[in-house]
Amino acid sequence: MEKNQKNQEIADLKEKFGNSQYFYITDSSTLTVEKINKFRRLCFNSGIEYRVSKNTLIRKALEQVEGNNYEALYPLLNGPTGVMFSTDGASAAKVLKEFRKGNDKPVLKGAFIDSDIFIGDNQIEVLAALK
Image (cartoon, rainbow, N blue to C red; front, side, top):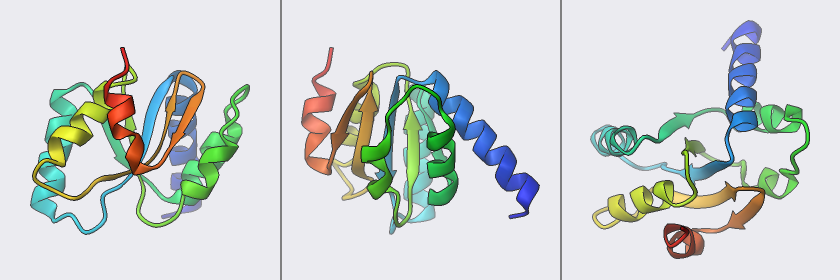
């Protein structure tokens, strides 16, 4: 990836993070192409944008968003990382929960919900129950 492409990706992610009150950080490694396509389709049908990006680019974008405190999410940015952007706090958790009925991934690394941070895969039930 060239420098101008990286800068564009950072700018795009910064805009998404800045405009989103709800996003989930996931790990979908080891999913086959067929399964990840099914997951992406499920996200799309639920109104959720799913993006995969390099951890350093995600971190740089988060660091550039003014007025937000994302430091607790930085340690989660290792290994394969996907970000789910949603318009409410529970829909992404519900999609993860539904997809994982037949799969062991994607794993929830963490979530940012209206200025609260949730860490760990064990938070899916809590997040799915949000009003």
